[in-house]
Image (cartoon, rainbow, N blue to C red):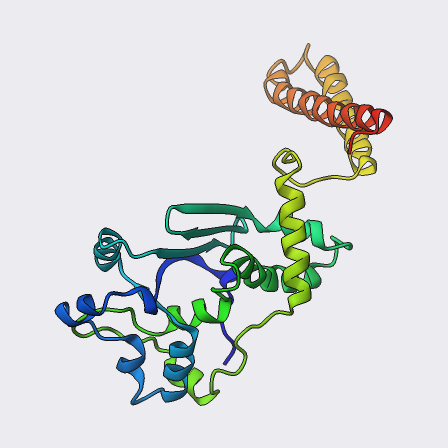
Length: 267
């Protein structure tokens, strides 16, 4: 059974490093460790989770831990926007993973390579921001196992299947990719963010200008010709003309700014 990578999430989990949980809180609150809850039915996963060193916590317990001065970690992802969220204590980061992967990937038209690199880059980002303490496999194990809590909890339906696989397929990334991601993050942090939306090539922008010009011209001519007999045509043609003019202006401005930057030597 394959593991659902973080890049396919639409959720945020709160984690805590097991070593940071005060022993008296475990004892007084009668909290049960996730690994202990599943050890009888999933001993391999319990061992992997124990070695990973992180457990998931729910909001109520998270507040108690935060009040006790325990550092909380948060990892979230929204696959619709490729937005990643990471927090370690009071430090928070929001990352545009599409932009990061675009910096790493030479052929941006290769969707398969993009998806694969995005998946692994999430793992690399976690390692960079946590200075090697948190990995994707630790997050996935914490998400699969029940949270740190007292009393009964519901077990994940995929627990038994992953136990049969012995945790096979848990992601891992090379140090080379971690170094590349760290360099790309540093570069993006030092460069102005591009306007939202797809980053088009100059050729594509010129093509769109021609297409919008043609569509706008047709709308104008059609309105002039048909208006004496069908004046209502103007109602439909006007928005088309306005949109075309806005698109032409936008692409022309981007091309003009790019030309100025190139002539001045600005990156």
